Length: 149
Image (cartoon, rainbow, N blue to C red; front, side):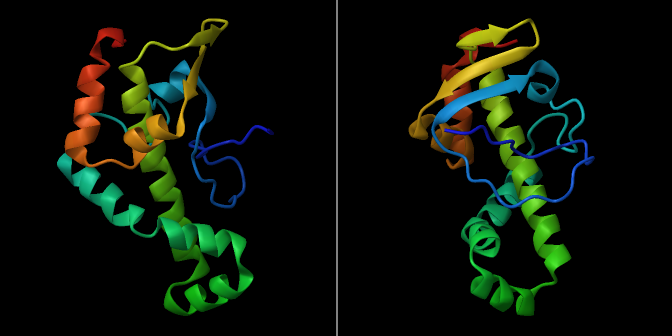
């Protein structure tokens, strides 16, 4: 299976199509894990969670927009292409940050050098980290707490 790059935080690359998260091996630099260059720094707040859950309701549309030209044409009647891209990018950054909050509480499965952390993630792991309620997500982090960095 080819590697996929998730939300790019530095903004140096061109806009890319929506990438769904699923089971796999996640290799994340220590800098990215800590969200050093992200717009999603600091604690995960209730306001941030509300924004994430709101944007998450559009996830099927982000996927359709990227994969189906006829759906894209219909969606472009509702919002401008730039608004779709901005919303999708914000969602992906929040989703990646939410994943990183969980992974920071968990011991990595391996390390490459001393800066790339490797995590084997099942579909259930990814769903719990990115698709669960705030209560379930917080509980997941607490259960993983012995590996906090």
